[in-house]
Image 1 (tube, rainbow, N blue to C red):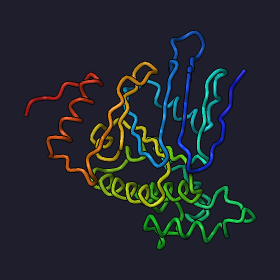
Image 2: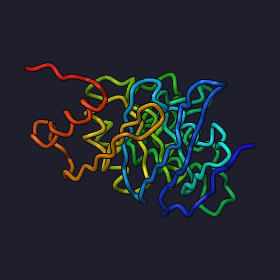
Image 3: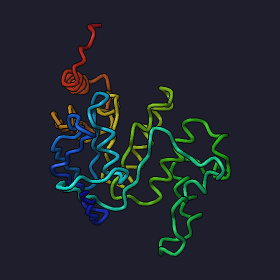
Image 4: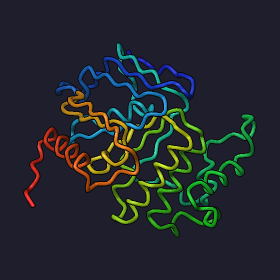
Length: 249
């Protein structure tokens, strides 16, 4: 028997208790995991491959069932931006952003809402373009617009910058922080990039063998300078917990 996600108002926080997930008779991928994300908080989740990050995100996104006995309470709606933009190639950009929006929900015309979201990510000039003509950064910005147009209470970011070049990634970091600051959804960023986590998040978690083994607040003001001793110290602590030894310069 499976549990379910209890929907909360959009300005509530996310709460997970006792989430255990295993496949067949293997060791649990998630092991009695507890997680809290405060309203408007930006949390980053680090972990080695196989630590359970993707399974956790898929459960929160409603793509995998909630196991019986777990408590999962999430602010609604929940929106996801994946590593790959997953734009439908037969729909132009604004129609991709408007996917799933209903004209009779009292929130306005779907096209108008999509155009407003595209303006926020700087893509007004590409609203009629086909996905195949977009650059990697433009495609990922379109995916962010598609997530934010729903005014999510919880925004899930599944390594959305991993496939981008270094310069585009830096620009996307600034854009995501700007959008988060404007809308303030509770946000969970799943990433392998320690510097990215320290630069963006209010709090950084490390997941290991299905459990959160480090919960590290990050109170440094934004934008964060990677050359500061505080940034370097937090980076070193996270790398150490991930089992990565930095090489001396």
